Image (cartoon, rainbow, N blue to C red; front, top):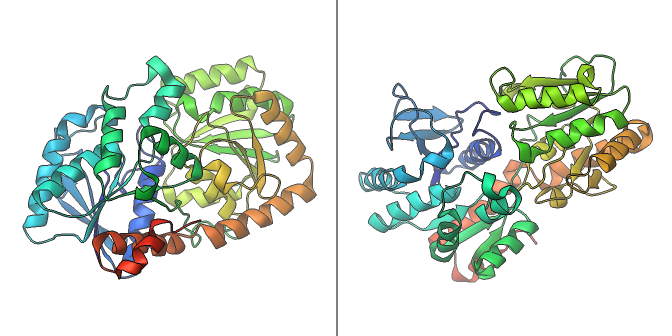
Length: 404
C-alpha cells in the first residue's frame, strides 16, 4: 500500500525532548519505519520549519516531505492552525501530481484538518489518531491551556467525518464517546516500542553509586516532575535524573531546580536535558526504576521504552499507563498528583530487590510480546486495508477492533 502519514508539527527528524517534540515524533517515525519494512510505501508530511530543508528527505526506508505552509521558521504548535488550509492544498496537489496514497493517516487534530482538506480535493480515505484531546487538556489546565479556541469543536467534527479513528488505549475510547465519536468508527491499536533498539542488554550511562530514578519527558507542568521532586525526600540515598527539555534556557527548569533546593534534594536531582533518540536506551538501562508521574497522559511511550529495556515502572494511573503497566506485575501504579504515595512506592521498590527484578523481567516480556512495532504495524495495516477497500468485505469488521 501507499500510506501517507501527516504530522504537521511533529517531524520524525526532530530531536526528542524539545518544546513540541515528544511521543508523537517517535510514534510517527517508528510506525513509518515498521510499515516500510513490511513492504509499504510511506511518506510523512510535516510542515517546513526551516528555509534550508529539502522538500523530500529519505529516512529509515520511508520519505519525509516538508510542506510549505506558513513561514519557514519554528513556531509553537498552537500557532499553526491558520496554515492548515495551505498545508492540505499543497498535499492534495502532491497527490494529484502522481503520488496518490491508498490511505492517509493524520496524527493530531490539526493534521486531521489538513488531511480532510486534501481528501476533499483528491479523494483518499482518512484515518486519525488524536494523540491528545483538547477536552482532556482543558479539564486539567483550565485557563492555562494555550490551545486554539475551536480545538474541541474541531476534534468533535473530525471524529464524525474521518473514515476511522485509531485510538491507543481504553481511556481514550471513553473520552471520545463523551465527545460524541461513534464507537463503530474506532479501531483500538496501541502505540509500540522498538524492541530491537530498546532491550535489556547493551551499554548504559555510567552510574554514580546511588540508586537511579529516571524520568523522561518534555519540561512541562503536566508531566508531574514537581510531584516527583517532592517525593524524593521519602527516597533517601537515591538520585533522580530527568531527561528532556533545555535546562539552560527554560524558565520551568529553573523552577524545578529551585523546588529541589527547597525540598533539600538539590544534590540528588539532575536535569540532563534533551538527548539524541539513539542514546535513550543507554539512559533507560542505567536506571533502577522509571518514574512516570503525569497528571494525564494520552498514551505514554517512555514507560514502554523503559519496560523493553527491563526497567520497572512506577507510574500514575492515567491514560495509556493503565493499559501498558500491569500493576503489581511490571510495575506499580499510584494516584496522580500524590507525591507522598509516589515517594513511598519508589522507596519500597528500591529496597526490595526481589520485587524489582521480578518486575523488570515481566516488563521486558510484556513490551516485547504485546507492543513491538512489527506487531503494531501489522495491526494497523489491516485497518488501512479495510478502510481502503483492499480486503474482502467480510474482513472489515475484524479490522475495526484489532486489539480486544
